[in-house]
Amino acid sequence: MGNGINLRKGRHYKYKSLATSPIDHVIEILRDSKIYFPRPSELNDREEGKPQLVVGNISDQSYRPNVEAWFRSCVSDRKPTAPDERQIQSELSLLSQAKLESMSVEVEYAYKLAIEDRYRILSFGCSPFNRHLWNEYSSAFNGVCIEFNTDSNFGTVYKVSYSDAPRQLDLTSNDDFEHLRLTVLVKSLRWKDED
Image (cartoon, rainbow, N blue to C red; front, side, top):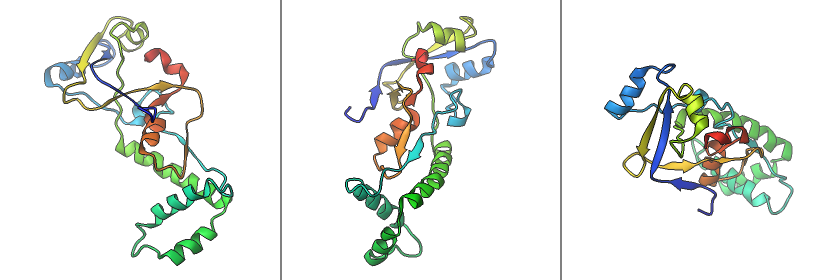
């Protein structure tokens, strides 16, 4: 896909310990077809689900339309009534770089809370032969590797990419795929062995 998101279909693998995780959980997966999807804060990667919100240079004429579109989107739901065009133009004229950067700090906090509330993330391996996953998640080869066929009613599975580049999401971005990618589909290179 052109947006950098790769959908995955077919077989995927979940490695489980039989020593450190309750055997009841493995039985629940196999017998009851139930599996727990953890919140981002429950994952071992503390950076997952936490992109940094940034603001471009609002005096840049090519960036200014992004700011205006974002601002209009923000005020369109204002209660009790949305502002009229004159009010919008007046408020836009008061926006400064410092004000927008201050707003991004507030929005970043709210964004991370919303991600924590909205998303559940289940990580799969791409192969049943991943030595790292057997060692780390299956009690050093004393656990199980469960195969899932994600072509069924399981839902959408995305391929994670690995990069140490900062995960920066522009405050004015309204690209849902970019939000998804930078929020939950990019992990640092230190996790690359998990594939």
